[in-house]
Length: 79
Image (tube, rainbow, N blue to C red; front, side, top):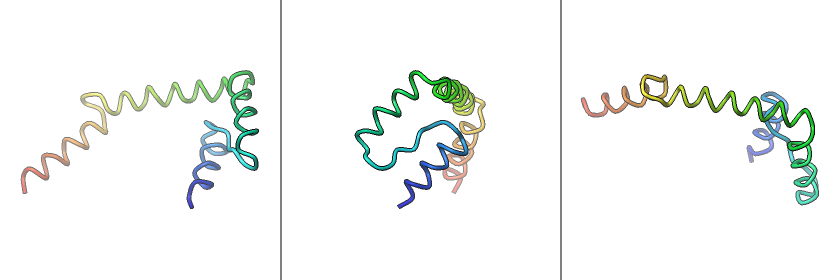
């Protein structure tokens, strides 16, 4: 039930995706062409690459996600 909300958020707020509506098969081809050929697709790929780097920093040793999981494990083990 929340897929349309997620799709719209990723497409219109994050601007990192293309919402597929009405006629899935035909829209898939159009979306792939937009991603591969349009300047909009280039911007999406650049944003995705930047997000990938942020995620990598977060999960590497010393990153925020890495530290949060370690803190959770330590808390569980201390109980």
